[in-house]
Image 1 (cartoon, rainbow over the protein chains, first blue to last red):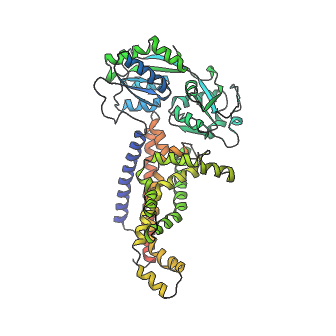
Image 2 (cartoon, each protein chain N blue to C red; image 1 turned 30 degrees about the vertical axis):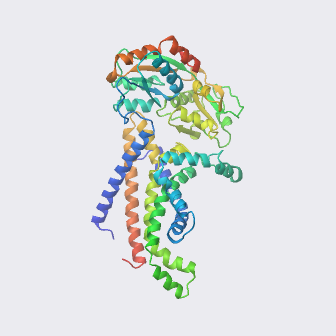
Image 3 (cartoon, one colour; image 1 turned 180 degrees about the vertical axis):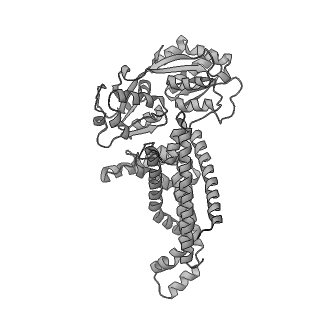
Length: 275
Length: 229
């Protein structure tokens, strides 16, 4: 019979082990987000920019143009807008934040983390349904469209986690308005961000995915099977702002550069609509 | 008391961990036997490969599994075409990922127990006329049992807590691959999800304590059985 002492010892050991495991899982999860919160402090004169995963290609190019034009060198961190916002809330040293939906910027604004007067809605994107490139199906997306038919008997579809990733939120909203959410939800694979979702479709593991038009454009291994009507979801708007704790002239200069004709050309090239 | 999603995550975690341990047990005993009792060219290579999941980042293991067992991969494609079995996005894939991560821990514990078995007892049994299989089943295996048990518990705990390999290989599918670790991860990303995440952490704690208490009780029984109480 285990004595009381044995049970107490076992419970304390379990508690310690579990706390260690929980801390380990948390830090493992965070290190997988290419986070700058645990990275060494940015070099003097370097501007830290946190941007949504879908802005990866466009912002990297704008960054190069910015440096070539004599601007401060930039250090980027691309991840799901939600992940970045939570890191900024915890003190990550971002000077600029570009989110894929207004909600995550509102989240930071409510916590007084956005520099006053710096917030601006920069870009607009479109939501599309993609399939692996060898699938030639095409679908007109409208009320009551048959999503299940596209997936087949046991196929799954993928998008960002609707609980916190912007593309997932737009996808859930659109599918709910079109009456396809209840049938689609059990077959959903939740990805950490839109690029991970895109990768699943590229590999042919997921039968379909909901991503932004600009993501489908940079991938040769997927094709667009349908476009979501703009009235089925809130506009895919990208607000960008300087962060209150790192509001420097260099940050404001970069924000200004994002408005320049050079930067606008790059965004249009990747398929964004510039406001 | 528990929401449907929380129950799903708990049930799934237990199922995945139990399947992972049960399926890798025979392989772990075989591997431990090979490493403890046999000598052959390539033995240290086998030792290294078995211990890879301990030293490689879990995401790398998940990625290897994806390449091998994905629907377009060499093993995954074969399984799908000939047996209709798909591992990606399913609980069986999650069990495979957890099993691979826990395997080296199980092998180490069982190997230790095997090396501690008195070869003299085995030799005595042989002189009394027992076949090799008989010796294994009636002498070696019972003496190894405490080690096998501790290996299973460690592997169960590792399988229960696996995150990187699972999310990379089988993704985050609620009700199918969203174990407690993945559910906690999702909740910590959600605005105001911290309270719900804490609930899941407490559930994990309860499971861990229960597993330890059960294992302690079982270990005592086993020790009585083999006469070392």
